[in-house]
Image (tube, rainbow, N blue to C red; front, side, top):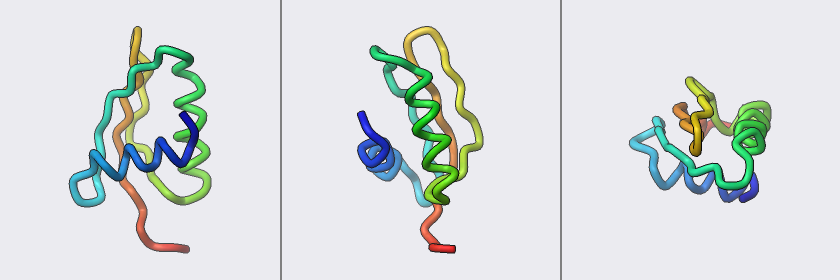
Length: 68
């Protein structure tokens, strides 16, 4: 999974601007966390919570639509 695919997943599960998703981390949960941090640095999302559990990563946040 790459950043663009992850952003598409966030858009797919969002309700308005808010999203909440659990991603199965079969490969590496830290890479998913890193991609979400990169998307936040790029200004595409705002992370409220990113928690790595045993076999999944829970991400909650806001999708930013304005380009600043």
